[in-house]
Length: 91
Image (cartoon, rainbow, N blue to C red; front, side, top):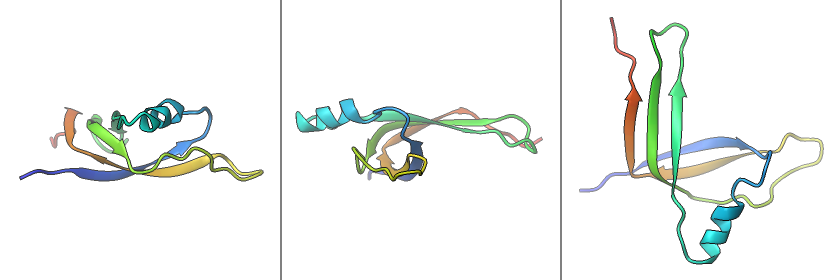
């Protein structure tokens, strides 16, 4: 049996983040990434960090903006592995 996770992330268009990945796709290479998620809740003791591995974005936004609007877009992704780097444990 296999497993995979899904998620989405909101990105701000401040530089051409996906340009190299888009070029890899044109060459027939499926680029993979890692995403580090951090949860710091002031009510909790400590922080939780989880590293998502083998991340594949479902879409690559090459151009998506609107005049007088902050350049942001939400991208869905899948991943096949993860690692908890820090955990919040109850007292």
